[in-house]
Length: 215
Ligand code: ADP
Ligand code: AMP
Image (cartoon, protein in one colour):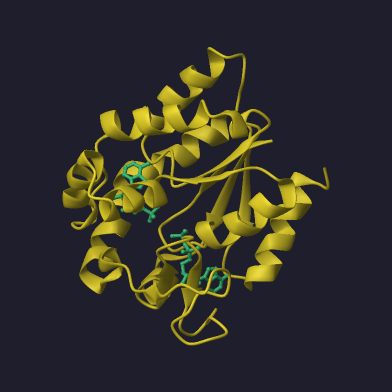
């Protein structure tokens, strides 16, 4: 199963991705996680990406597309994958489509997680993440069992620098201008399903499972 999770920052894509990846046994591929890993390891890519991420801007397509192509060529993607945070521009979507077409492949589902702009700021400024495994928590809506520690791997959880109020506002603006056009792009291809992301985490997951089925 080849799936794209689409939706504004803070919609709950990463939260749902962890559960989908486990249930359907497909790798969860988050471009944001890949960039953050490179930033923490101070790689050349990380240094380049950080200047954009810190400002709430998108990392240029040329960098992002190559990273995803490399990742999708890995053996673990043979039977499917779950993309979270990619594509974010029409150019990225077209490049992905071409890349998959050349292998006789295609995306099966695009899941659009819908959350109104009014909820996004509270969700993102209250978000805490595990730098080691990428798990996402919320101080009010989804707190970890032990304060400051990841439930999954017991590492420290932190607030992302780009989750400050000012940067979140920029990211929402970037989403509206650069990523929202993807809704029409995938709607035209008749592979998009909308999910109400304002429901409780488990209810959102149930809606997604109903769309993807039990296989
Ligand atoms: P995204 O990956 O789309 O940016 P996350 O999955 O990191 O979003 O979720 C953003 C924040 O909202 C996190 O703090 C997360 O714990 C919280 N969250 C996710 N889903 C829900 C939900 N259904 N209800 C309330 N809070 C949620
Ligand atoms: P995320 O973890 O998905 O919220 O992404 C964090 C940041 O990484 C974004 O605000 C962008 O700066 C960058 N990023 C992640 N995915 C992409 C992408 N597909 N294209 C461009 N920039 C991206």
